[in-house]
Image (tube, rainbow, N blue to C red; front, side, top):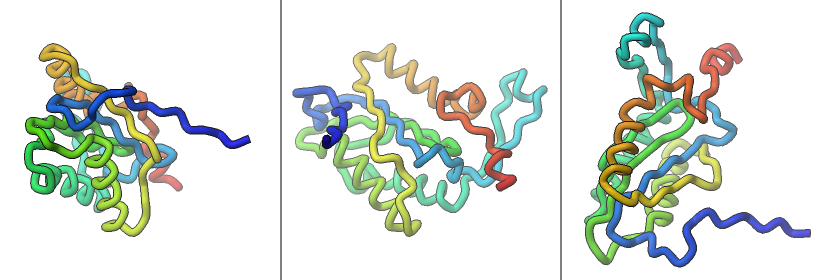
Length: 166
């Protein structure tokens, strides 16, 4: 029996429509390859001081790819993003028609990163959400802003020390 992959995109929706989209892209098997280190003392965390982290060489390639999306696609902007150890979150806005579809933008960004680093670090699929209104946009914006501080509460969390000790 051939297993058919579930389609996660909204049926009959034009993903090139002017709108804002919340995107999450994960690294295969949740390996934390996008940060080179991270630290946060418990006092700092308790008062909301941001986590201190540095992008790994892979994370820097991802950062460059995200920042080049608008260059490659006029009428498309990355309004907000964060690179976490094993995933990224972005708000991508399409402001004009014609524009490429979100799957095209994401797949080409993932392909560029894979080519630059010499292998594909990505899970096959990604999560997208069409942002419906200003309140949802602001909630997603804040989620991205808070994500590094709340890393150990994130659904994509893995203990970095486990991987550092391998």
